[in-house]
Image 1 (cartoon, rainbow, N blue to C red):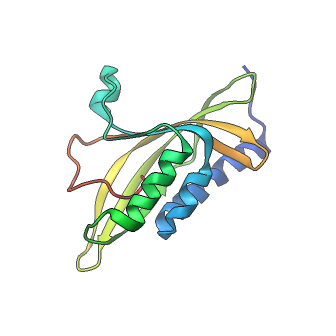
Image 2: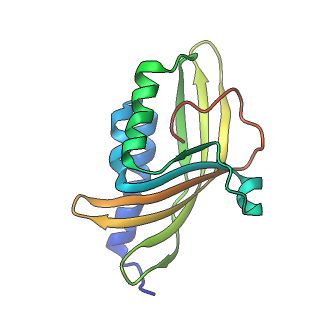
Length: 160
């Protein structure tokens, strides 16, 4: 098991911050670029995660599937528009594999603001990630968003 140097940790922290900025900006075309071509993005309730149950609220297994979701958000899904704002903790690095794969996690809180109402807590949980170095910099090979509540208000439209 390798260790993570300070410069790489700073890059990892920037990846988390840039991801939150991108999904908060509403420019959905930015989202898939944070992932490798063969990636995994899953949104799963904590109860299922802790029990080892595979059922996830959302599950995408490639960047192409993420791009399809972006198309759906922009062109086919009809919903009350809202803004979201992420607050993400610093990543905790659990280990770095010999091939450089970083296993990390961070807590998150997502606030939602509908155009005609106050901001509310929308989704809270933790990211469990595998991050790899690519020629374009660090990217998520997998991102598992484990949310704490068993209840989701309405539906999940935008990436967490």
